[in-house]
Amino acid sequence: MRTSDEELMMRCRNGDMSAFELLVMRYKEPILNFAYRSIGDYHRAEDLAQETFIRVFKSASRYEPKCQFKNFIYLIATNLCRNEIRNRNRRNTSFFEELASEDGDMDYLPVMQDASPLPDELYEKKEQQAAIQQTLNRLPENQRLALTLVTYQHLRYDEISEVLNCSVSAVKSLIHRARQNMRKLLLEVGIGESSNAKV
Amino acid sequence: MLKCESVHPQISAYLDREMPLWRVQLIQWHLKRCPTCAHEVMSLQQADKILGKLEPIKTSDSFLPDVMRHVSEIAVIEKHQLPLMRRILRKLEASLAWARYSFRMRTSTYAVAFTLVLLVMLASIATTVYYPRRLSLSPEKNPILAQSPTKGLAIIPIEIIPVQPPKRHLSVDCESIEK
Image 1 (cartoon, rainbow over the protein chains, first blue to last red):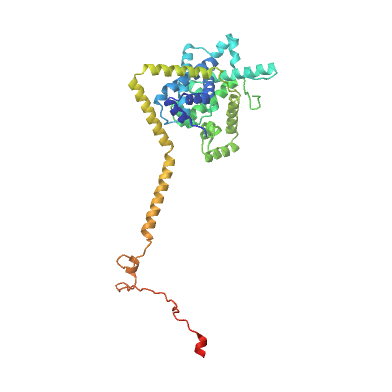
Image 2: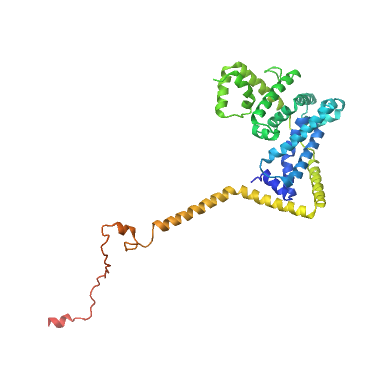
């Protein structure tokens, strides 16, 4: 039987480091993907994911299993990503602008791990994924976070409302506006131009 | 019938199936009749499909060791910095929290066990009260006899003595009697 996340967290509170290690193994990839989709920078996303786990460990001594652990960890990750987005907006830097000057960072796009034998197809796929990520980064902060949580993390609306600290109806309209904006932005960059377009 | 203005804001919730089934069916019924809304659903679905093209990424090999190293350092620092009393209190709090959590997790098991025990106890009490093993013949003690038509009459105890065949004490010689 699978031990629940809440039980692992309670064990961690009692000083069981192996329970915490198991939690990290369970959530490292979802949290990294969430951070990466939210800020669009692999290195920074990995730092934020590490910081999320460190904060979870620090707050273990005060942890009470009142809500799901999943919501708890996403709440921490969301706050960190939100701060990062705000800092980036303040500095007015875009990861993809930085990328244009540093070719090396493109290696961290997941498509590079693909073992496809055709370099042209690989390059096209890489470019398309970069364009989609760039479009996602242009969404307003809350819309981007909500859309990432529902599309990539498969959270339910009530769970997202707990993470974003708003009502379910607010989440509903946030996600709807995010999808509408995403469609508009994708059309601007020429992805999914018509219903028959190749995506 | 639903109007387009009420369907449009619900399209995302419809795509994510974040509504009751009856509402999903209502919207489906509307979409079959309204090409504008059907197109809107299709275009949002397409945007979602494009977003789904982004592949998941993996953590670097050093991710887990790095996190565990950081966390161990924090644990050591906390151990040295916190005063002894504070550490004892924290340990005590953690143990209490664990006890509370385990009790809460097993509440349903405890409730079922308690209900079963209660039912067994009630059943045994009911058996003892309503089905006494020895029926008393005295009308004062036995309510059934008190209500019977023989109420007030004296009951004479009868001793039944089983009839036994007579024992043979003498042996008779039949030939000598005939002579």
